[in-house]
Amino acid sequence: MISVPEQWQIFLALGGAGLVLAFIGDCYRVGRYFWRPGLPGTYIGDTLFWLVFTALTFILLMAINWGEVRAYVFLGLGWGFFLYFLFLSRGVRRGLYAGGRILAGLVARGCHLLKQTVVVVVIPARLLLATLLLPLLPFRILWRRRPPPGGPPADGSR
Image (cartoon, rainbow, N blue to C red; front, top):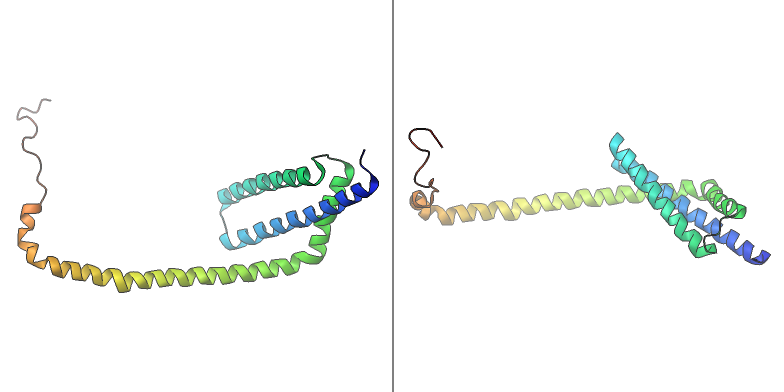
């Protein structure tokens, strides 16, 4: 039998687990805003989210109270969700949206830098290689691939 103080500790820990799970839900919500998946992507993403969410809930329950499911477990998780959405969700989402915009800007700058690298390094390298191979141009006839000798029979049967 679990004593009442231990049940209160478990209840408070489950409230914290509810906060963590609600935060993960907000992260998924913001991620969907930035990725904007189509209908199949939404179905797949939601399914994967709920599978991960369920597994994480199971792991947290096993870590907190050895997987015992009682009424106060649901109350603790619900209390954590409620407190998170009441006091923290709006501010956390604003921060996640701002972080996502910063990350998107960094990715865009990285892609631009990569394109500039291609323009500055690869294109002149191709021109240099073409210039160096210019004296070998008359010999390109020798390097052409020729079909093997033979061919289909003259009568058309195989």
